Amino acid sequence: MWAIYLFLTILLLLLTILPKIQHSHWIFRVPEFGKIQITYFIGITFILGLLIDGSENLWYYQGLLMVMLVHHGVTLIKYTPLYPVKTYSKTPIF
Image 1 (cartoon, rainbow, N blue to C red):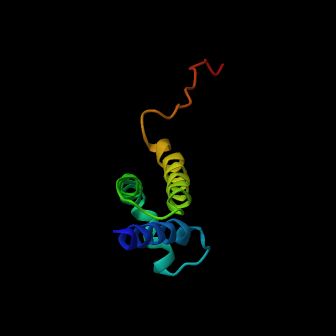
Image 2: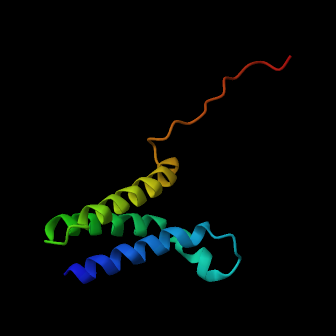
């Protein structure tokens, strides 16, 4: 179970870092389109980490997952009703 947890954590870290590389090849752009799904998998992996009996390094990986969750959450919050929207007042032009 510990090996599956480590594999998922490293895979999710890789999928989080790849879109930050400025290259036009498809392998770098594809993870950007699955940001919502990656965020859900990060949450599921975090909960999985709480349920397994891992090593003494478990909390480092949990912290890494939490940082990735916050990073994706900050990006995705802009597309929800929770994000404040600028309102413009209607004033006469003349």
